Length: 459
Image (cartoon, rainbow, N blue to C red; front, side):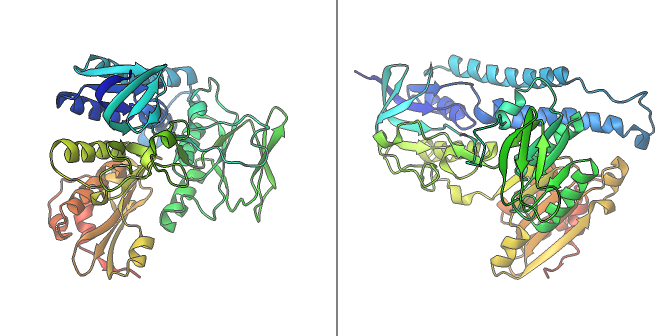
C-alpha cells in the first residue's frame, strides 16, 4: 500500500521549499522529493555560483584599472583560480546545506532523497517506495540544452554545469551562443585570463533585446578582448590537437575557430522527460514543458507545475512568484495569476542590463502611441564619478494612458535601479508618479525623473 501524504512536492528549486513549508504549516502532511542537490539550478549551478564568479571577475578587472583610480598594483594582477572556486563553492555549499537542513527540520515535512516518478495521477514512486497524495506539485526545473550539432558527440563539450567543475582555466574558451548565459561566462572567463570567442548564429547578440543594447554590449566586450563571430549558420564540432575546432559559416573571417574548450550555451530544456508524466496523464507541450493554466494548475486535477518546467519563466524570481500564485490560490482564496506578472530580468554582465516590460520592438508592434525617454550613462554624474559610463537608460510610455510600458537600465547598478520603474508599473500609476519624485543626489536613480521629464515620440 502506498504511504499516504496530503501533499507531495517534487523538487527543491526556488518554488518547492517555500511551498512545502507553507503546505506543512497549513496542516498538510507533506513529502518533499529531491533527487540530487537541494536548491536546484539557482543555488547549485546557476545564479549563486555564477554571480559569485562575476563578483570575483569584477574585482580582478577593477584591480587592473588601478591607474584610472589613482593607485598602482605592482606587477600583473595574478588570478588564483582555486581560491576563486573555493569562495564560490563555499557560498553554494552554505546555501544548499542550509536549505536541506531547513527542509529536514520543518515540522510535518518528510524528505525523500531520490528520483520521483509518477505511477498514476495521485501516486509517485521514489527509491522503490510508493507515495500517494491528493495534491502533487512538480518543481523539477530544467537543464542546459545540448543541440544536435554535427560532431557534438565526437568532442568533449561543456554546459553551464560542467564548466563550473573545471579545475583549470581554459586557454581558449569557445562559446556557442551569444545570449544571456554565454555572455556572462564570456566576460567572467576573459577577466580570469582565458582567450574567449563567442559564436552566434544570429546577426547580432541577444536577439530578443533592442539592437542598440546588442551593439553597445558587443562593443564593450570587444574592448575587453572578447572576439565574436556572428551569422554562424553552419556550426559543427570536431577534434583539434587536443582541443576542439568549431566550424562556422560566416561571411567574414576564418571558416573555423580552434579552442581548448567549447561551451554550449544555446538554451534550456525542462527536466520532465523522466518524470512519468504519461502515467499521470499530465500534458506537456512540444518542447516538454508542462502545460498549466493561469494559476499553475495542470490538466490533471490536484497536480500543479511550478518554476522553469512550466515554461512561464526560466528565472528564480518567476519560480518564486509561481509559489506565491499557488499558495495564494490554494491556501488564501486569493486567485493570483501568471498573466498579472510583468516580464523583468537582468543580464549580469558588467555593467548589467536590467529590463522590465516591453522592448522598443514590442512597443511598436503593440500599435500604441509611444513616448520614449533616453539618457546615456555619460550624462549620469554618479556613473562618471565611479568611472562606469558604459550604457544608457531608456523608458517607454503609453502616450494616451501615461503608463510605463517598459524600461531598460543598461549600466552600473542597472539590475537594481530598474525596480523603481517596475514598481510604478505594478502600481499601474502614470509615469508622472516617478517623474515628479525627488531622488537622492548623487545616484544612478536620480536621472530617472529627469529622463521622464524629457519624453519624445518614438520614431
